[in-house]
Length: 349
Image 1: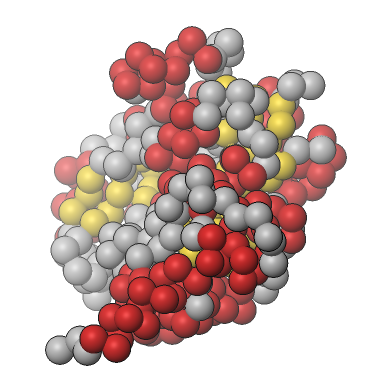
Image 2: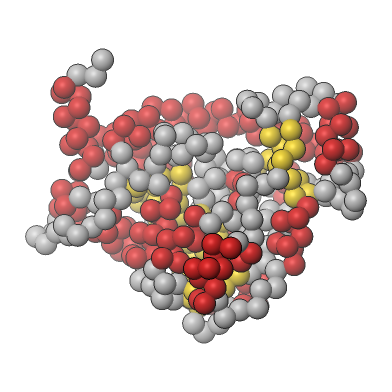
């Protein structure tokens, strides 16, 4: 049974960002090797706060059309104009070559996504953003625990968000965090999302912002995430090993496009294990062959649709887009890619 003094303590840490909240933020900073971490209600709120803090309102940004709508939602609410660039076929992340083709003098930011927990090329994206003087923001909600070239996923972004909701590496019911190395950005994020108590503690201001949106993480979510953080990352390693076993089997069958993560130094979190059918292979045929090799699971359509083909996007935001969409790789992947799913483990033997 929870004691009254514990409840009082949780109320205090909720407002001040101390205690369990500070402990969780410290673990995130240590894992990523970044200077600042700020826990928030969820990754969507985190992306919204980043846009506000960077002054991204009624601005143009480049992003992927192959992602879940929540990636763009808050930026669209702020009146920003998305410019869609094509993706890499193996990682499903923004193609730097495609990004170069759509950048304009009005472009202010790149919004990259580690879709399904596959790390995007953070080194190349960092170089590209620096070359054009753009903010580089990463939706790393699905990739906590993933690495590429030995670096944590999206490490070199100006700001990235992670998530603690259903299916993520660390589950806390709901919640998220923002990571950044920019002190001025961090201070603005505190100003826009946190209670005046935390604003005074960290910013030392006489003036506080009572008009901030309540973007704080729930104190009980912080307690849960903090308690399970290390164990969750350990469990992820087991999951990653199982996924690479399935990838080895898929590659040996030759019915899907080769998955070359190992040789590229890519270690996804495998929020979803996905592959692309080759030629005219049928899902049912592939599933039977997998089952004959001891695989127990199912093959499903990815929970992602092309943003610019979704009726709700077209109804609300098409007027914001002055671009003729030409993303052939994203189109191809949206038709031919599938997810490997099971109730618990991948159950490959």
